[in-house]
Length: 96
Picture 1 (cartoon, rainbow, N blue to C red):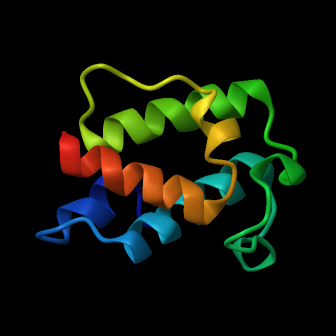
Picture 2: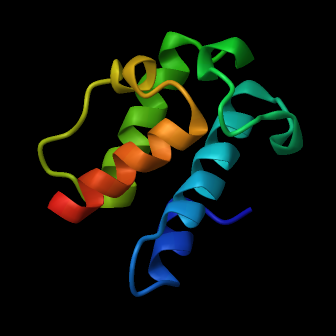
């Protein structure tokens, strides 16, 4: 599975579908739920991501997008589905 840097480096622009694939892979990685069992509009918390996983995912998002100011793990609870997280990341990448 490609990491965020590999996905983002392969493209001239960051697009929503690539971000969705990346978010899916990270949720699967942190919860051991197969990607094909995670729906784009399913609540992330329903897959058992814990606070440590939320902190790690927030850090991964910061790193993938090159955000200097960082983001809080609470982002996962505000943007609580794969689609919402991908949209959030897309908006952050546009302003980075």
